[in-house]
Length: 272
Image (cartoon, rainbow, N blue to C red; front, top):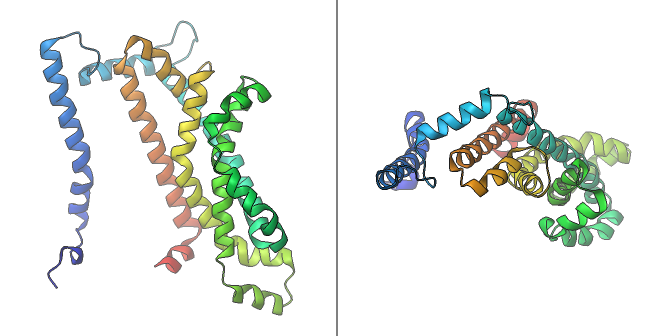
């Protein structure tokens, strides 16, 4: 039937359609920037692309006098290190606690309501408490990321465990499998792909918590740099940093998606 939902774009068309919104945004910015610079060549709100290039080149290739570092790469390394630590701890907690709570009925009855309530606490609202308890160093930043995304991952893994057909568990018990064997042989292979997807879905929130923590107390990092230069209206630094963070998040998401497809191809077959 001639309906728009029955026509799928080809590979070439898909690429063009995917790039079109980005091109439109760039053209709109270019038009707005040219209009503002024509009125005030010193305008800082919408600098020209040449200003972006000059600022990023300076930050990436010139050693900062105060820190003795290439600021772009130093900030990136610090933020990624904090992010990876927070995501890694959250994923480990999500895997262990999510499986145990989701698989063992007594633990599910005890902790499921608690995790539901705990996951609703706004992490940024308790940020001052974390700084008081853990200090202003790296630990409080990692704890903020874990506090923000671990409850979501735990609940998501719990739901995936609970959705495993009961027939599989019964068959495993019939074959004499112990609880540990059922967890490793039945539950774990079905949970791991979901865990990676949960981490992917948590990337945006994790970046938010990293930037928020760095904005309040840090000696370096992408969020720290953005909030440091905001007082000077340095949009030629802020906007490229935002674009850089977005690119890093996209690459991490892409990498996790490829990892999932490579390590757990059966999960895609099952979904299809």
